[in-house]
Image (cartoon, rainbow, N blue to C red):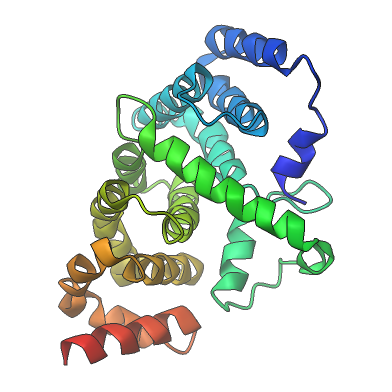
Length: 266
């Protein structure tokens, strides 16, 4: 089940009032809880299919970025920020479990025993399309709205090195890069690549968690499909050669990327 389907069940003719109440809640709730309200506000605004500039989206993204900034000096913000980032990926099991990470690992061909693919087998083509539409929309929302850069702030949180937050940052980068391959937004694609590439390189080279390495290679493969990012990515070839080579037997993404990059530079 995806969260868009769940939220669609909440739709009423009074959704405008619901959003206004959520906006008030966003401003009055405890600072560490606001990020979760912000995610729900983004979902509700998305369900109204607004294509114009939205105060609700702007306030929600501003809140998310602020919460991520707070993670840099107050660990109390980390649990809800981690959950919010994973929720934004829009993947939930029928039992309500967030499965964004395990969905991405399966996509990368990594054998993840915690993933139950029953949910994928039972969704309709329409639901699958809705999931992809959500990812593209939320990618644009996060990267376009707010005065401060979501991607730069996420990169700083990643660099902080707190395991729970790091994993959420890697997962977020993986689904964002996936969504960006389907969009024609060169400036945003370059901005995201510039913010995430140093962290992805470090993850491949130094991280001890094999799942994070797999997700990093998936992200790099996604960026390699984007014309605006391909040449800058190839400039890192020497630095990512050995990590990709050692990861080839673990995930097809590393194998494909290794062949693609080093065929190009040989």
